[in-house]
Length: 221
Image (cartoon, rainbow, N blue to C red; front, side, top):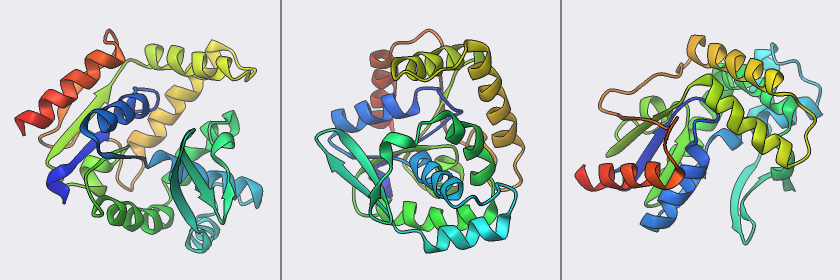
C-alpha cells in the first residue's frame, strides 16, 4: 500500500500538519501527524516526572504506553492509555522537550513500527521529521517542506497566541532554533532531506499553493 502513501518531512512549524491534513482531504486519504506520538511520549514523561536525559526510563515508559489515534468531528484525537491528551500536546513545555525525547533511540524504536503498521492499512498522508528517511523510505511520494526559522517562529507564535499562551516572539524563535539543532544533530534518524524528495519552501506560499504543489507531485509520481 506504500505506493499510495504521501510522506512529508520538515522542521517544526514548516506547515506539515496544516498542509498534510488538507492534502489528505483532497486525496481522500487518511492523515497522521507522527509528531503527536512523540509529543504524547513527552507528555507522559512529564506526568511521570521522568527526566528527558534518562534514556532507559523513557524507553521503558514508551513500551508500556497504549497509544490510539482516533478521528472525531473535532479532528484527530490521541488517546494515551485511554486518556485524551490532545489538547495538552501543543503546550510550551512539550515544545521545549519533545525533540530531546524523540531523539532517544528506544523511544523511536517503539513508535516507528506502530507508524508503519498504520501506513500499511491503506492510503495515507503521514507527516513528521523522519517519515521519508526512516519510517516510510519506500513511499511513492516524498515531500520536504521547509521555511526560514523566522517565518516558522511567526507562525508558531500566532498559533500559541490564539490559544492564549503567554509567550513572546523572541522566546518562540529561540525554541524553534533550539529544536532545529536537536533534530538535525541527533544520532538517531536526524532531520534531513531524503533522496528523491520534492523540496518546497513555504516562506512565501499559502497553504492552498503548497497543497497544489504536493497534489501535482503525487500525480507525477
